[in-house]
Every structure is written in structure tokens, then in C-alpha cells.
Image (tube, rainbow, N blue to C red):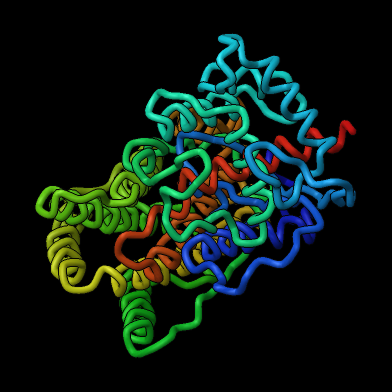
Amino acid sequence: MMFANAQRIGLKALTCRAQATTIARRALFPSTTPAAVVSSVSDYTFNRCGTPPISHNFSTLAMDAIPLKKKELGTVTRTLQTLDMSVVEKIKAELMEADVKNDGRIDAEELKTLLRSHNNTFTDSEIIEISDLYYAVRAGGSVSIDRFIEAIDHAVVNADKGGRHFTKREGHPLGAGSCAAEYMGAAKSHGNYTSEELDVKLTHVKPEGIQDTIALNSVKAVRFFFDTATGWTNNSITTDKVLQRVIFLETVAAVPGMVAAIIRHFRSLRKMQRDGGLLQMFLEEANNERMHLLTFVGMKNPSYAFRVAVLGGQIGFGSGFFLAYMISPKFCHRFVGYIEEEACSTYTKIIDAIENAPDGSDLAEWRTEPAPKIALAYWKLGEKGTVLDLMYAVRADEAEHRDVNHLVSEMKDGQVNPMFDPQVKLDMMLRKYVRDIMKAN
């Protein structure tokens, strides 16, 4: 079965999403402690298990630390903080070779050439993504070779700060600001989940303060009344009960993301200010929940009475959530984070029920029954993807929504979407590049 070994992943799977969330939190709330002398080059896992990230699938897998040899520090326009002269000379030679215009500068196309010379480290999709981002942050322009090397040095020095190490964003050596976050990284691909991403861990964010406590207790109350009204129990899970439950819940689950996007959209227009890339992220979240619904209704056609109940739920919940978001976005995102915790728990129980169902039962059929075609295409489950595979993918989606909403509830006005921060993305690319350079030495 496609994901039969998902529970054998081990420590790496256990830490995947925690690492992603930790780095995003560091991006939002960097330490004020002065950076110590950097003695190694390292990178972090920062992917769709927590992010961002989005249609651009630049992979930033955790990288082993590489000791920096204590030699003479490199010099370009000034003495560098970390890179020694031998590494600087090698980097400069590669940059000059990629500089096809011979103007001493690197533009987006020349960056592609540079990264393609390291095709064992960067995939084609990563190269395209990062060159597009580089083009955006440079507004189609270029940067001098010396400045590019200084950017690499800065990225290495500030690796322990999660990427958000410049108090003023215009201070980034490559000039990376927040502009690109407004229009890049919107249409995220949910296909090709890794085994680590599918092995979702049930996590819980402890409430801090009365607002979080109210959000948590509200979710518990809603779940209790919904379970009671529908007769849902974990000991009597059937295919019919599963489809009835998930279809109704997905009609409601798609509301918060759309409401958040609409309110943020109008606020951006009204104040004539950027949104930091959050608006597009929540539009994508709403559409992802809608795709869950379209998939499940392909497996069961709801009755007219069911559809009337959905209409009432949308009017009631949609109106209430809209008003609540106008008053306190922080509360609403915490509320949604707790809802998604429950969703992860529910899908985990459904998956367990399918995997442990006796042969010949309806639930057991889902271990081999092909998933709807829309699901095969959207999640890239492969020609033989099953309903069980679909459940794993949907749970991974919900885990991402859980982490994102908990994270956004802690953001302050003016902060950039931590799941797609241009500074973070560029810095991780630079660290990945210099790591490959140093391995070759």
C-alpha cells in the first residue's frame, strides 16, 4: 500500500513538523541575544509540514553541520565574518563563470546557471522557484558579485536566528523585502507528500490567557454537541458515518480561510497597505478545504435535507465567524487551530479504523478501493491511489492548517507570512549552496 510504512518513520518523522514550526516561530520572534561566533554551517527543515509553503516547492531539508576551518577570513569589499578566503575564492570563481554578461553582477538568469552547476543539490523546481524569487526581490535587476558573497556570509552567520535576522528588511544584502510575499507562493501544491509529512503527530498548543482558553473550550463544546447530534463514537465508525461527518464538516471548514482572506483584502485596500502574504495563504487554505468536500461528495451524494442543514450551518457559522474576525483575528486563528487539532484526531481515528477493519467489511474495502479521480489528480496519489491514501493526504492538509493558524495567532501587525518569507527562502538557498561548496573542498 502506498503509505503502509507511514508509522515506521521514527525520530525523523516525529521532529519534521516540530522543526518547521520552530523555524517559523524563530522567524517571527527572533532572539535578541547577540549572535555567537559561528563555527558551522547548518540549515533547517522548513517545508509544507508547517509551509509554506505553497506552489513554489523549494525544498529545504535539514542539513548536517559542516565545520568551518579556522583560516584567514575572506575579504570582498570588507572582511567577512565567517567564510574563509579559500571558500570565498571558490565561490567567486563560480560566480564569475556564471556571469555571462561579464559585468561583475549576477541576475536571475545567471543565478539559474550557477545553481544548475550544483544539480545534485538543487532540483529543477527549486532552481526555478529561487530564481523567480531572486528576480522579484531585485525587481528584475542584479547584484554585484561581491555583494552576493556578502549575502552568503550573512546567511551563514545568522543561521541560528531562523532567517529573520535583519531588524530592517531593507538591510538584507540582496535587498530582499516583503514585496514578493504579496504575490508569490499563493497556489500551493498538495501533491507528493513525503512519508514524514504523512506521519502526522497529534499535537496540542496549550492555551495562554483567557482568550486562548475561551477558544479551546468553545471548540470542545462544539465538538461535544456535534458528536451527540450525529451519534458519532470512536467505537462504531462506519463508511456511511465517516462520509456524512466529513462532508458536513468540510462545508464549514472552508469558511474561516475565506473570511480571513476577505477581511484582510478589504483592510489592505482601505489602508492601502501590504498584507504580508497572508491573504493569499488563507485563500489557498479555503480552497484546499473545498477540495476535500468535492472529493468526498464524489463518494456520497448528500440528501436534500442534508444540504439544507449545510445552508443553515454556513449562514450561522459564517456570520458569527465574520463578526468575530472583525473583532479579534488572533482569537479566530487560535480557534481554528484548535478545530484543526480535532480534525487531525478524527482523521487519525478514521485511518486506524480502516487499517484495522476486518476483511470483508465496508471499511476494509477502502484499503484497496480507488480514490475519486479528482483526488488522484489533486494530491498526486498515483493511478492506484486508494481511499486510505486519500485519508492520509487529507490529514496532512489538516495538520498544516493546524500549525499555520496557531502560528498566525501569535503574529503582530506588519509581520510577513512566515511560511513564505523572501529573506528566509533566499538565506536557506545560500546556506545550501555554500554547504555544497564546502563539501567539495
